[in-house]
Image (spheres, rainbow, N blue to C red):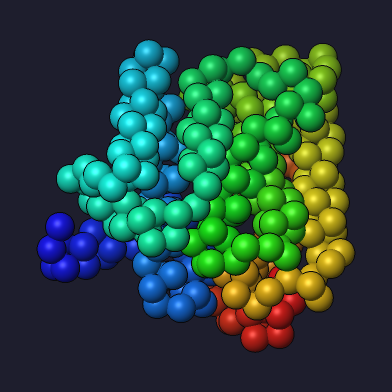
Length: 282
């Protein structure tokens, strides 16, 4: 792998991260240059496995796709590099940073759940999925930032909250594809067909409220010991500031997510993140 190939792959990963995970991409810009490139590779990898359910027609094909990534990660830990625009820079980051391999395993295992269209049995089951995917991603971000301790509980909580709010917001998008990522125990008597047809039962707002309130509680937990958080960890934590605004937006709409218009990236988000990093307040 030449320096030119690696530079081109970093640029590709930056573009993928910016398009698929804009909030975390923005936060990555506040990391030092070398760590920033590593974060782009990680976010691009996450985008690749997260879109598996969207690009395959059969669960078996999704399993095959995720197995390809699992094997590529295993090879990276053995010092082998697959000729792929995401794996080349990610393998380079793995070789230098040596993040725990089990985090990648947990992340891929979590994405296997995406291949099952059945609703989650409970809010606890949904939160476990959010922790295994988005929460684990936040931990990997810390690993690539070189943070060994002091911020892991906060990172996991923020990542988990990020997924809970994201899934609540994505309910109309998923329902249009006849998919639900909501807890069965909260759905109660709500007929899924009301969501699939775009005319949601009024009780859906209470389901969303419960999910959003749990996310807000996780953010409170994350901030409990923020004075002990190393400054180097902030690019993995400051997305919490963006999440605050998303939660407020959902609450202003009475938790009626089907009534929320598409939200373009905020022009003020970079300023809010800059101030969060500068002040150390995530």
